[in-house]
Length: 310
Image (cartoon, rainbow, N blue to C red; front, side, top):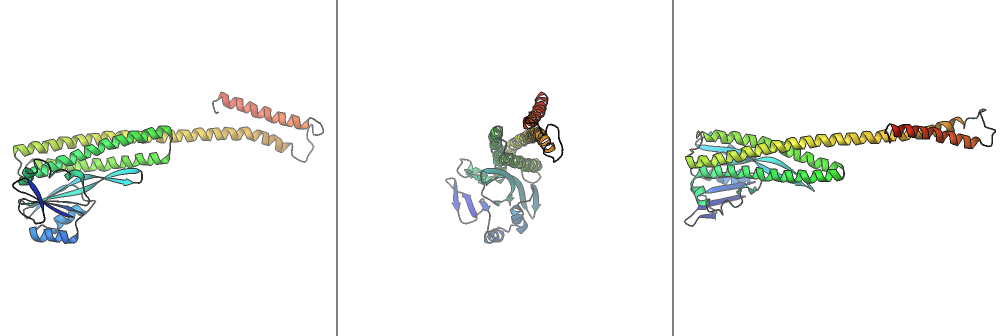
């Protein structure tokens, strides 16, 4: 999908023509849309192709007067009643006259951007526009991290009620999500640090403040991701120990029960042999045999109770 926004006398309007000062937003673009942008604006084809690779890492490239900035943005993925997050690339191409954003999926990072009172000013100042995207991406990470923390608490409460595999799998998905977040956030931090020096984009004092705000939010997200990851890792280890301990308790109980039941079986097996045995002619032979079995089993039960095996 190709969407074009351009400034006008009243603010910002959506249009179909590509003009100077416009913002072109490409979401899962078709080959025809990529070909149109390439031909009309002379954009390098590799700059349009790189952000469409889901494994692409955050970086900055400059070639033939065009700048390509790739950053990682959060991507929630729902699988039934489970949710996991990954980080996908968002490409920003700056040519000096126009800004192009490319992403594999629709992202909430741009929601409400063109409805804000600063929309026209953002399109007129490409550096400010790019830095505001950084700030929005950092805030998106923070928002999703808070949701992960909330989900972690919910899954933990479910685990307290019942240790089931499904809750452990949900926690595992969140733990993997935090790994993706941590990697993406650190890569984004490197990109912002490189832009801060003004080597790639001209950064004035006002825009530098926006970039610093984005860096602060990004650093906060990095710290939150690390803390949540440590908490989840510790929780997973704790529940793994609990499950292992519960298994040991069950096995210990079953072993004790087996030993208790083994003694009457042993006595019955001995007195069931076709040989001469004590008391076999006595009318009380059955009672004596059963009594001996119960006595041995009871003694073992008392010993196990004393050793807390029941």
